[in-house]
Image (cartoon, rainbow, N blue to C red):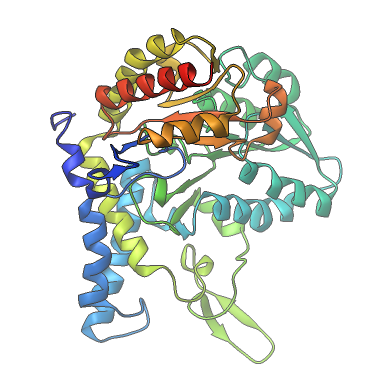
Length: 408
């Protein structure tokens, strides 16, 4: 990391506050990341200086807004090593991106008896859209099992991905277990059987280098608010030939080419998918967030999180009654730790930690099939990011020990 460990915090003013009389320790980054000042200022700057609709005006404000809006596409292209900025579609987030893939592409090609392969560890946004598609097409869902580290079991995948498989859709990183899946090998297996590989990158793109060409995947979805950007922004990347086969789901202004009384034609990819007035300020600010990440370096962020895991996991496991879900190997955690304290409901654990200024998540994490597989109703989850420190990790450990003692 280019900056010293505490320098990043100065860029995130929200972290400089007290919660319940204690300095804030923010460890809910898997839900949403905080925003550096440059991103926040970008939102204000757009509305103060360039507030105009994109693509539609010839006046100066409209031209400046359009230029900044389209510049983010190029930044996304470079971030994930796509072939073209035309492969980058703006959405509201990972959920909308996956829905568009399911309904705009998969629903057109699937037939009764075809199979869509998921895993037990998927977020609901990578389950529910496929359930809906299956109801409409007669396709069938198949679920891959997990190994002891919480990763998709490759041997199981080799048995279940076959000539019936048309879509394989998996998270690169589990939002509960923090396990990193072998996406490249799974993509090869999918392609060998003539299937399309869809990747939920919500928990991977913010935390590690993701190269769509090196992975040889077909679609990728991720959210802006998890990579330091604004809420309501997201990216759908797809190979251009597949995006050309996809149908738009939002119809109206901006995405059209010509409108006749009985028929309309649409613009080229990616603009045919972006009907209506978009979240222009959010997209521009997302570009600033990507600038920030690129300056820090995704490989550096991954290394920083691994070092934090190496530091904190042994301390957590030494706490009486600490129950860890997923691998105990720090190198196999992408900054996410899900756990429970024996005898305590995770909501009680999270509430107790909040009183100590430590913000974590508790619940089923939009992953109820995985909770059932783990034979629990819910868990607590601490998730780290580039601005977290070993001091934050120590405060988490101290707060959990204090909670354990209080509830004895």
